[in-house]
Amino acid sequence: MFTTLRSKIFAGFAAIITVNIVVMLWTIYNFSGIGERVEDIPLLASYFVQQYQPENNEGLQLSEEALSAIKAYNWQGNVRELENVISRAAYLARGNEISLDDLPEDFQALRANELGSSQRLEDVEREHIQRVIAESESYEKAAHKLNIDPATL
Image (cartoon, rainbow, N blue to C red):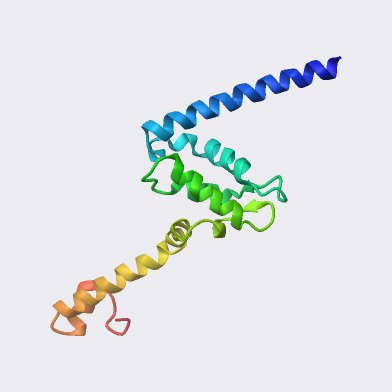
């Protein structure tokens, strides 16, 4: 009897949670873009992962890296855009985890930008040095403007 009561209580909680998610989804689908509701992205992404996980891959979940990229992405559309990304990633996932590699290229570019930030600084420095050289009459004067030894230049 206790087991039956407990299962009814859990079923009731599951129904309440499902109704709340459906109401939230309906509201976002119809009234606001997902970019305006960034705090809801983890819950929505988890919901869609459960909806689209293949039958042979129960327990599918998002990796931390993939979830971070999804939260950092500049969402232009509504929840349907997130739903489409998750459904595609769930289909492509190898194993029990959706990785960043399973997401579209736009999300992988977020990783490249984060990892490539030090390289961009080098590019800026190189461009600055080239501009100073072009504006100067000689390498010695360019080195003096840059406060470096002419041999380094």
